[in-house]
Each structure stands twice: as structure tokens, then as C-alpha cells.
Image (cartoon, rainbow, N blue to C red; front, side):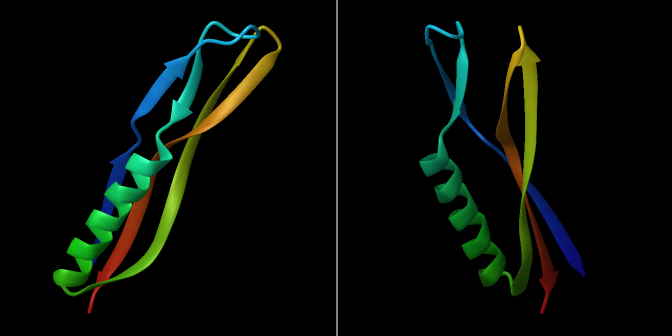
Length: 78
């Protein structure tokens, strides 16, 4: 049996001269969420197969960015 879990990132906005809004992913929060889910999967006797980032982005006025929108964890029952 396989299990797939998606963890959405939490982000904050900050302003720069180049752009009114820049999106910053809270990587500390994301790493804590990944650790919590992986530990729970281990407790439930699942082996982690992979952790995949899901990126999204935008192009605005000739400049662009991308960010990690979420992470997908794939696990298999032992």
C-alpha cells in the first residue's frame, strides 16, 4: 500500500524596490512539517520513498520568480 501526502508551504510577503511584493517561503516551518509527517509515517510502519517539491511561479513586467508551493511525500507500507 502506498500513501501520498501533500504539505503546503506557508509564506510571507516583503517589499523591495524592484517589486511591490516578493513571496518568501518559510523554510523552517516547512522542514518542521516534513519532519513531523515523516516521523508519523515511520511510526505507522511506512518507508519514505521520496519527497518531491512542487514549484510555481510568475512573470510580471519582464521579471519572474518561482517558489516551492508544496512538498509531496510518497511512502510505502512495510
